[in-house]
Image (cartoon, rainbow, N blue to C red; front, side, top):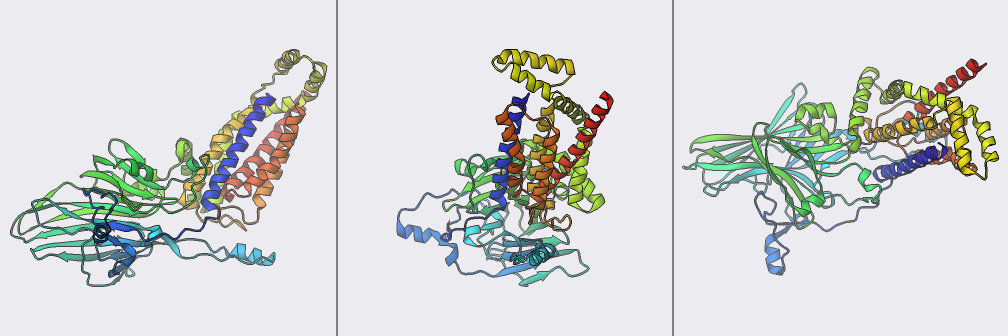
Length: 570
């Protein structure tokens, strides 16, 4: 039993180390982003149906076909602002080139923590209070939402994301008392084809509705299709080792289809093969830690999804609609939705089917989803995510109470027979087989389950890892305060109070359990509270809070059971 328990605890320590390393990759100091040269755009290679051109070898041909972004003349933009979004739309292509999430600052200004730092003589750290920027025109973090029309071969031209649009205003803001704001942009050619792109935003919403109205006065029928796509350059960040790289929050493309449901399309997948699939409804997206950006075409429409890896390290994921025919002197309308915002599951469920799956709890989703649901319900009652974590810990302890009860009774009996086990070990020091036989007889006589003490560890491992993923992936925990000095449950305790309390509680709990008979194992076990305390210094405060409450409840439960057994024996 001692060997099994020792192996389980060592395994658990290794998991904690791996989780800590993964957390450091997301929240620890990041290496400086190298300044990269401006990416180049091969002439319209990122349009649907266009082939990615091979590397040009002739310098004159390359200069004719390639347009450096940094050297392009700055086009006029239209700025749109609501209570939650600030967009900047480039009039070349009506591309959403900048999008800021006004309710989500990059860093939170913790006045309580700063006051405590001042009392302790430490200088307050400077914070970046700018809003999180999802779409970004800078070359090293290029990310944009593009859309347009592709005319059929027998039709005149149509505006794509290279065409220039006109706007009546340069700035739009959602007025007080108004819930909806529409921004029309117009494109016209000399044949009589007029396309009006209308972006519509709503108060409190992270959805941007796009309507492309085609008015055909060319004197002949027009046919074409709509496309919408996300263009991105992966950020230059440290991806970590092979042990921790798979445990970090996923960053890349995803699609949702009627047949295969939710699928990840990583940047490596886009390099290997171009996505080419048709489905009814569905959506395409680029997701990152806490936030998602998705184009969502009509659910009743047949859509074609595609990806591309362009020559200069850019990646495209998007969809296009079926061909629509527009007779002369008539019009047609194309519609789609852009979602760009935090991955709040209840909100995303109302936006599109399966969009909430972008909150990825890895292989432990079947545990993580119920934990999130319970956390959300308790938070709705208390208004405090820290209290919700305490409530979930109580619920988990109640759910596992019968198992814990039996386990702690077994541990109490093990502690009682510990002196007799040591006596047997000394008596049969030279006969290991005889010692094992006598030990099993003693277990049988005293009704002790040798595996009983392993059950709490086995149960806690998946719960602990699931809670790690819930805390690391759930945007509601980002910058969520608890009380006193803990003003952000998603990052480490700024004064390391909770990790120290956790280490003390672990030491107390260890004293209630029987020590291993093997002196080497006993010494290693005594080091575990110190080792765990060091690792938990860098864990999110919410996860350490869970462990502190769990240890405290276990200490109370085990102390009570031990006293009851001693009382009954007397």
